[in-house]
Every structure is written in C-alpha cells, then in structure tokens.
Amino acid sequence: MKKIVSLLCCILLLPVFACTAPQNTNLPVVRLHEVTRSVFYAPQYVADALGFFADEGICVEITTSGGSEKAMTALLAGEADICLAGPETGVYIMNEGKSDHPVIVGQLTKRDGSFLISRTPTDSFSWDDLIGKSVIGGRSGGMPIMTLRYVMAKNGLNDGDNCTIIDSIQFNLMAGAFEGGEGDYVTLFEPTATEFQNAGKGYIVANIGLESGEVPYTCYFATAAGSKSETVHAFLRAIHRAQKWIQSASDREIAEAMQPYFPDTSLESLMIVAKSYRETDSWKTELTMGEADYLRLLDIMEFNGVLTGRPAFTELVDNATANAAMEN
Image 1 (cartoon, rainbow, N blue to C red):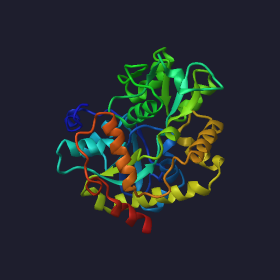
Image 2: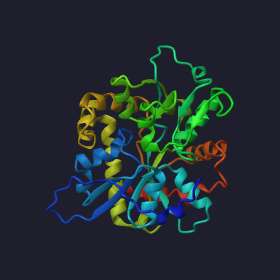
Image 3: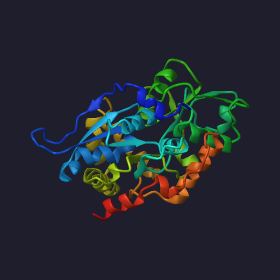
C-alpha cells in the first residue's frame, strides 16, 4: 500500500455538496470529506437535512472523496476539518511513524455495509458457489476487501487457491467494472446494490456485515488539535442527535431525509436500504468505540497481512471527545 503521507503531494479534484443551512447566515463552515456517498452513512445526511448542524451553529460542507486515503489526505493537507474514513487509515498512518497523527473522534457504523452481488439470481446461495470464481473486492488494504477476505476465508475460500479476489479496481469504479463484464461477483454498498438488483444488473446473495460480525468500519477523524475545537464538538453533537433520531424514525422518514443526497434513487429504494441497515444493526447508537471492536479490526488487518504494528487503542481513539459531545 502506498504511504498515505506521500499522497499529500496529490491535487484533489473532488465534487462538493453544499450544506443546507441558509446561505444568508454567517455560520462557521465545517469542511467534511467523506470516503464515498452511501446510505450507509444515513445519520450524517439526516443531521444535515433536519437542521441539526444548523441548530449547533455550524454549516457543514460535504465533499465526496472516492476513497479513505483521499479523505484522509484532505485532512492531513488542511483541506478538511473532519474526514469520514475507515479506521484502518489511521492505523496505517500511525504505523508509518507520524507523531502528529489524526485521532478518531466518533464512530458512525459498526459492521461492513456491503453486499455480495451475483450476476445470476439464486434462492439457495452457498459460499461454495464462489469456488473457481472471481470477486471484485475493492482496493488492496481497504476495509471492504479486508473484511471480504476475512469472511471468505471463514467459509473455506482463499484468494489464488480456489477463487480470485480482484483488488486492482478503485472503490468508486467497482460497480461500473462489474456492469462492464469484469468479475463473476462484486461487493457493493447501498443504494447501488439495490439499484443493481432492481435493474436486473446483479442480485444480492449475501450480507458481508452479518458474516463478519461487529467491527469499527467508518469513523470520524480530526487532527489532534482540531479535536479540541468547538466546531468539531458541535459537529459530533449533531451526529449523535441524528443517531438517536434514526432509532425511532420510520423507514419512510429516514428515506425522505436522505433523498436530497441521492436524487437519482427512488424513495422506495431508500426505504428498502434504510430498513436493511436498521435490521442488520449497522448504525452506531453512540459515538464511542469499544476497545474489543478495535482489537477485532487489528486482527482482520493482521489476517490480511497489512499490519506492521498494533497501535494502542488510547493513542488512536479519542473517546473523551466523543463522550463530551454525547453528554452535551
């Protein structure tokens, strides 16, 4: 894996989604870079759509980066105040010896949010169906492909032995590659997975998150100095409010709140995926991360051969900031 710090030399050309707060206000802007645009991150869009950020006195500008490394690069380069990325990204940075490393200030999801998509429908899927087949799994070193390898190995499938896992395709290009004929299977997040199935382009056969168990999957990072700022605390308070709101809201209410962020996805599809992620207990109800879950993350990374050291939980995870936001 390329060193993340070296990516600071890259020029980021990223699409920006403007915040929904009234434009005639003078609210301070919080620049958030997200790894991708996905219903998996519903609490984040709910917080914006329902005005929770504005209630906290901030306007959040969301940029979709197209990968954890790019989102983290923006944070390290001072182009973002917060980034939403896989926690493994922070582990990589710490293992590179960077002393002034970002810290995790909040956890958003607690299991893999991707689904295994087949080219053909089946009522009796078995992991043995993947023997001799190829699966597009994402970029090497990222959480999606590491979790996939972990789950497949649990089911007797090993890359290069009895199956092939394709790790050369960028995250945001996986759906297009599969649609173009590459791979026998692909892992996709929502709403793309449901859209593929509705269009007859592929069929959902397995939930990767249920197979892998709970693991920190997407988290909010800030710089060590930034984690102490009032704007970061305000951001986290709004996210936690959205975490609680989603627990009692209906699937339709969640879908309606998210629809402005997914204009090409029908309300019915958003309701389906909201129901799916709620039923699989994918969203965190609090901002803090458990140490046991963090250690499971390190175990998955070690299994994938990408772990050169095991950073201490308290060095990377700032639960004090998360707790302060929840208390307020």
